[in-house]
Image (tube, rainbow, N blue to C red):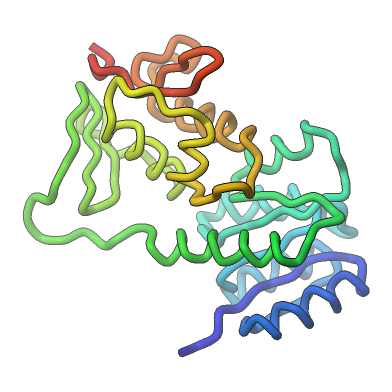
Length: 237
């Protein structure tokens, strides 16, 4: 079996060396870059299976690298690495399309768990279109095609990320049922005790921007304050 390749982008050589040693020990192949511009070029040319991306980088910061890759249509899983504790930094990374983040200092066990989870999700992601009509969920003007892994609104396909698709699928499969952030973290992120619940709120906000006519007045993805989120049983009607 071909080894999965992880691109490490961090300007601290000691951290890169530690990560490389432990990732190789876990059976991964690695690529390394010490600045954002080199990291971006390696991501483009080598198409790694996952990127560990530090926020504070010379040449081009991690946020910019993440934003550029997502604007170019790259779906490579990205885990942001930050030494900062500010919530705004973490939320910004998620808003720009990062799949996850981890704060220094972190345990290698937790990092490896997150890497495997994100790789597993990516490997089990979108399926190519198949012939014939597959199973679909119809919720008012929203149609979730479970076979093609696509979502339509009023007959128009929505451009969703893999996580946004999995989030709306999870909610639409249980219309009217309130799912807590913890439940969504387990179902969509596949984390039990890892992960930050703020990631759920950011993902919901991004999903609403694509699904709702007015994200400030949602009709599909609803909030039960203090409890969680649910898909409207009326499907926006």
